[in-house]
Amino acid sequence: MPSTSRLLLLGAALLPPARTQVPQHLVVPAASQSNDAVSMLWIAGASSQVRQQTLIGASHLQSLVGRELLGFELRRNAANEVYQGGITNLTVHLSTSPNAPLACDDAFAGNIGADVQQVFHGQVTLPTSPVSTGPSVAWTANNVVRIMFQSPFVYAGGTLCLDVIGQPIAGQQANWWMADAEFEDIRGTATRVGDGCGTFGGPNGTWSFVAERTLLPGAHARFEARGTANGIALAVFGAASAVPIPLAALGVNAPGCSMHLDPGLILSTVVAIFQPPVHPLLPASGGIAEASVRIPSSPCMFCLTLTTQWLDLGQPATSDAWRWSVANTIPALDMALVDGHPAEATGNVCVHHAHVVRFEYR
Image (cartoon, rainbow, N blue to C red; front, side):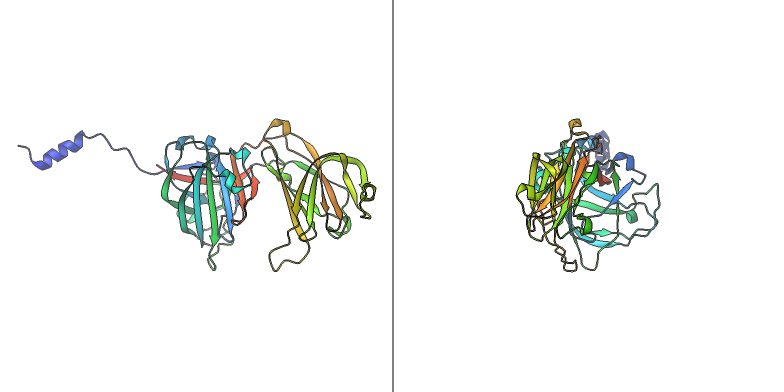
């Protein structure tokens, strides 16, 4: 009779080959697998409290459907400088977002899917990284921040929401550790109209602003103004007036102040508060009010032109106005970044700028 050991060897030879469990990697966007991308971004928690939600469109992730995601890495940006290391506390959640990147919500909660799963919580090392000038930057240990999940996440398709909350550790901050990022060089246009009045903005009354990089189809256009701390701010949107209209003509006692919008062609008004600075070292110079307007990701938005002007009801006073136009290109990155403070419900949305991410999976 054959020995027991021979029977075991025979049985093993008849078994089908085991499926490989060797982890594999996928870089998003794929074009940055080996070479440095064109931009850079902060890493959450490296030096300050930050929440970063990255929405990654399904077009980047077809090979991951049905696979277990085991972790991810962020690679350093190519630069002729050493990045000093540190340690940070990170909490990472993954989910299938209900939103495509170009329909991203500025509210963090709005981008989280029903299958949300915490995959990591703990300390992460940012290594001291030597000079790496590119164009090729290797995914080696001293070039990457590596987060291995404590439980895998099965990707079932759709938009992946990578939700990272970072909390710095006192004395362990990495104050300049910049991660590689992809960036589309598109923007709208904005032209200043008239002068503001009141106590802010200097002799020309320049106390309102518009972010041209946010004037994109699918983006959230951002507008800011400086005014009376804790006072009410009104951002008015509509068509420009052919000539300035003194506020006195509208029954408002505000000498030297004018409206640069046509009162009969006002489309909407956003109410905000001039929030005073929270940092004790910043001078007491009024507050900042913000307004965010979602622009649909449709060609019908190409070159849409409107004018925006702020009113500071605490003085009262009017800002300078901005005539702005939406870009004539829809971002093609198929990624979005929502960036803000962990204690805030909303963040700033970018649909043309996002980290280069390398996923580990099996």
